Length: 167
Image 1 (cartoon, rainbow, N blue to C red):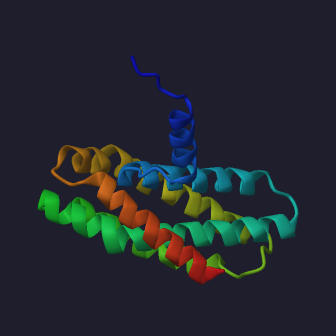
Image 2: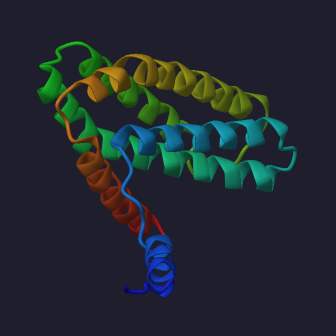
Image 3: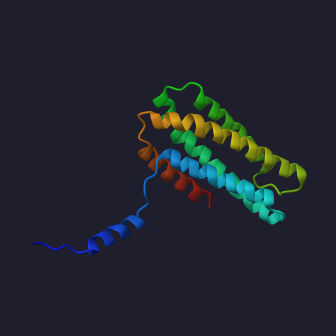
């Protein structure tokens, strides 16, 4: 009769906690959507110019990096896998409009109602875009033959790289 020790599972559990778990691409992108939505909510409640400025900087960074990784990695893979000629081009055009909105507020002093209006429009625009991605693109990507975990690994690595460049 052999006995087993209980130290191996504990070591394995510890190793798992220090190693990042690979996530599906859609899960990573949904997490980004949730984060940005929370930042927009915080902005709506913010009263101080400094707090608004800090939130807008984070919103712009998160949206810019998110859009870039989607355009470089996620969209091309989905477009190819789905042989899509509509959803991904539309999403890409929406990104271009979003980039224009970002350019109007990034690094600008929050100076009143027109600035707040731009952030509100950006928030509504992002919510529309997110709804289309999550309700149309993501389900089709999941139903395709794409390896979403591998794609998620690529997205996470590129996002980390882009965020590091911005610091």
